[in-house]
Length: 313
Image 1 (cartoon, one colour):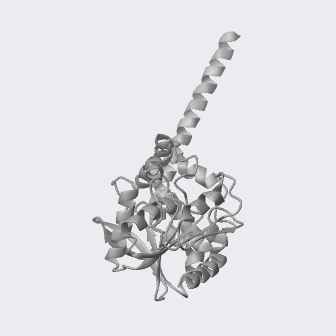
Image 2 (tube, rainbow, N blue to C red):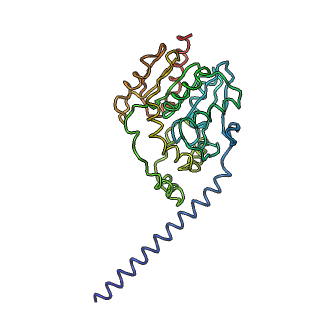
Image 3 (cartoon, helix red, strand yellow):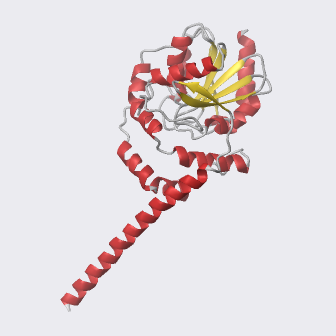
């Protein structure tokens, strides 16, 4: 009797192991096939500009006299599409240039270290390729770190800086070590795709048309855990540390639009107020909403930004 039970258990375990193995293989193959088929469904937008021997994708919209350069937060899959509500509000008044850094959107990937220095220099090179030498710098989230470095290097080109729930060098939790190897396994195995497919749709309730949502999903799957993004993640702690010694140039107009109710970062509003306290023209405004304030508050952001620009002239 015991022998029969043992044989049954062993056979059951063998079937389970085989089933798991087959499932893993299916997930891997489906991912390969899906990656290939989705490549043909991506609808190009913007234009490619040469940067460091590679191609960086840039979207330009609007014909205003002043230029606004828009830069994304970390990991935003398709910045030019993600910024669409904001671009539509800005473009009647400004020439808007959305830069998709390497590893983002339709830009190439790069093996070059994702240090603040390299990211800032590549952004500047993209603008030089476009012959843009005077502009307002506007960006989201981790832009707060890169933008701080940028205005200290190329401040003579920047007429104002605008942060949208932007990062602050002294915010907490940026010394954490991320599970990079796990992310690489999820990418290669196809389980990253499976997790994303089973998760709630992050774009479902957002003010984008169905085609834009579809494109954002495809590009998110394409860029998920790519080598450039993972390297940037590895460099986040060092990039935040390096920024702690930097301050905004005193005469640079700076305005922050930030979450009124950020529960993830302690002292979110005072941290931003501290950043602009020595600025001759510095301002902090709060809005109810999520971290991606430009998804739901673009109209108010642009109205208040334009008012700010009138006041400083």
